[in-house]
Length: 266
Image 1 (cartoon, rainbow, N blue to C red):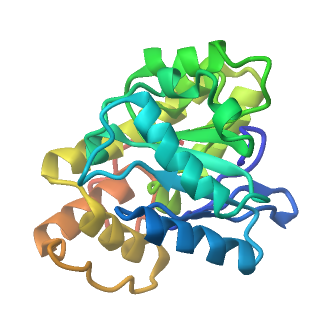
Image 2: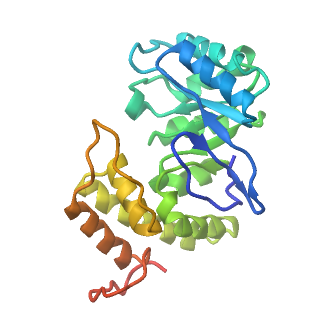
């Protein structure tokens, strides 16, 4: 996956797209679904079109109630594409699945031989740290998905990152990665704080997929279109406030902004 030594790039929700210095290296397609049959069909399709791996989220309508049930579900999906590396997407805030990732990884390759790693999108750094600590002899990829805590995860052994904010905060994230690799931890922390300032600001305004699409449109100039129902389009008030904050933190050019924040991160 995207090594902490490499550049982060914008990623879309359906794929995990690691980068190397020479461009795209792998494409891992997310094939999770509420139905086992649908997830298996998606896994087979991913193999047919030449994907480098598949990732699966836990089913969250009829929820697995313990580790063994969840692993059995994942095992059946992985078996539908037996030649592809398999990754588990851990995001309990959205799935409601409270099974700790540390517990899930214990002996998982005995059941799923193609298991290669984990996307960890949770703020429980104890759980994440134990995933790394207890699996040091295995070459698992530990991808972190909470963008505002990435530096902490890197210190704990994250091997990469996948996140929505890298679509528009990628430059600062790359600067943080470079500082971390150079052991310039003071600068790395400064970049992480800068990223947090923006995320903290938009969270207070009400932040989600719709708002992410609006910010991506602002930064890229490419219309991302409206979200699908039941999500609602980001309000003009949100977009205006987010644009001003992006400019004040040096994430956008200062075109016509009079109240520049002289203490913004650089």
